[in-house]
Image: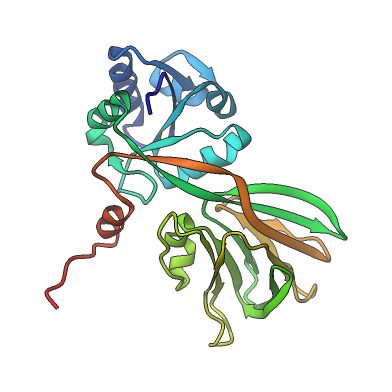
Amino acid sequence: MRTKTIGLIAHTEKAGVAKLARDVIGEFKERSLEVIVENDTAKIAKQKAGGSIVQIAQRSDLIVVLGGDGTILNVVAMAGKNLKPIFGINVGSLGFLTCVNSSAYREAVDAIVSGRISYSKRALLSVELRTNKRVLSTVHALNDAVVSRGDLSRLIRLNARVNGEVLTEFNADGLIIATPTGSTAYSLSAGGPILSPESGVFVITPICPHVLTNRSVIVSDSSVIEIAPGSTEYPTFLSVDGREPVRLPPKAQIAIRRAKAMLQLGFLPDVSFFSVLRHKLKWTGSNV
């Protein structure tokens, strides 16, 4: 896919990102590609400001993100319905969503300009919060939605349904509903499985369950997952993609389904999900 207009967004607090932004912009301009620089990124890189994240997403064909996985999650959240394909250049250690380190930015630019990057289609969650049948908010998530106890050191009860059918009542510190992309994030830390990006499923993973038989459950991504607190005695919170937790109101229900939108995540031609997985998790081969 040939790209005409590049949107550039950086994590401005990362060390060395200002120079990297200038270098990347220079490489694209040498190849006669238009670069639109997000306002805060432009400020630190001493470039012309091109607008907010939302405006960058509206005007670009491809968004190049300088930062880490968290930066990409933030761009996905802010871009909303204007989400465009994203290519991440990592500033720091290699993440699961960024496929190239900052030292290889020229290689990344060459691949983008020549149309050699490949795209992995990533499902998004649509997370609907409602009470008394009234929808309070609907947000999208690339990684996960987490229903938890917050800072309180007590178990909470969470009733889970899948497509209207009772799954179980989880007695745990919380519950994670993750996409395949999010399966390598919080869900993995809580003991959930690793899912390949285009596997077409979601995973429901309890956090520190009190009942040993409460385990991760994998469901089709065509499912509707409904979560409701089993008690109003203690506060319960919802956090989407690591954003600020929201305390659930009385009689709250959360409905989670696959969003209509998808993220096209860019990779270099010789980089795959499994190669990133092996590198990140320090897996090696076996002679057995």
